[in-house]
Length: 495
Image 1 (cartoon, rainbow, N blue to C red):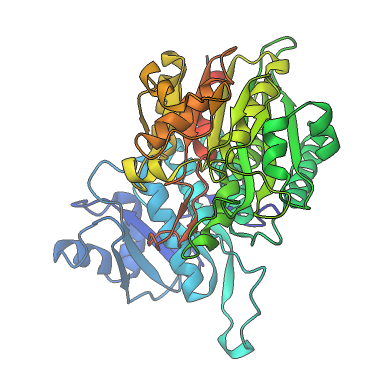
Image 2: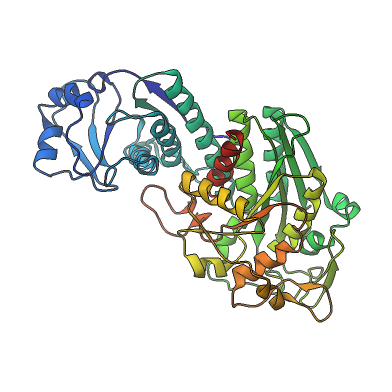
């Protein structure tokens, strides 16, 4: 299920490119770069004229197709990066839009150039090209031959080829493949993307990259006394799965970083059933697990010199004669009793036992990601991921990683006052504190099971998928939080 798309690097002059479409990325107000002089000459000065006449202003997402190409690339388009300077985020977005435009044209491949791309920009461009070229066609019938358009199968970045830029390209291809894998899993319908499929994907990943793989089914969860996880899974005949993938790239004995993901392959809400309108989006409730799998794909491809373990729990939350009921009390693996007051607050029940399970790895840090609460969407919209934690130094590391990856996060408070809202009359804790501060009380619930190690929780409910077309990528899965996970790990490697 990994992406077949790959990006190459070429030091050829843009004027000599034979690409079916060549995108020229320029910032707002930029003059014609010297590196594009030959291309502009071959086009009779069309690029310089467009800049001089302000027919092209370099605004973000702006595209202007130019005519007059007598040799070299078949089509040339200038694409805007927005205001100077051309940041990694800007070139990633422009590259994604370029690849998506090429896919709509059916060119099959493309090239992209600009003003002296440096290594960080090349990595970002490669990742962006993957993002724009990605499509989910597995459950669509092919169009008639007359309407078929070639998918974008390859792309070339025109920039100097050096060991540094080649290394950056390899990193961008790795990131692109991991994000594409996470997006494909997210887009796959819930009747296909079952706990078994998530486990099989992780197993294949572990085999390809030489990682240790552990899988628990329902009987295994029972042996681990994971009553909280099992409460969610008791309403479905599908086998729940707990999966751990271990990459031992660091020194023997170094404490690992553990990434934890919520993998609800479909969330109906259970007995506390969700409204019918929009419920189909709940196939994306496994995005935390998809993010873990995507991040481990990147880790394996990049061979990061760090010990990292990816863990996720997968099941579905369904109403049935065996489903958990509001008012039930279950015993978690940690031994704490939980009153279930809302069966739609199920992700935290799965994560509670996962956060308890990972204690055995004696982690240096644990970061979990989950499409956990609609309340986080209300608080931060679809722009930022909610970030919570018990260790401010670790929270700061995660926030830096999220910014570097372009997956922006925002810290929300986790004061003890919020714990009062999840006190139970019949158990140690209840699984919902109601609507006020819902994202925070959910994080406070998780904190009860993550007290033995530094921990950060990412609520990606508003950022893991989009219900609208974003222009540079279509509506659907975004790949969040793969970038945050990977940038955090890379920074740890650089210590």
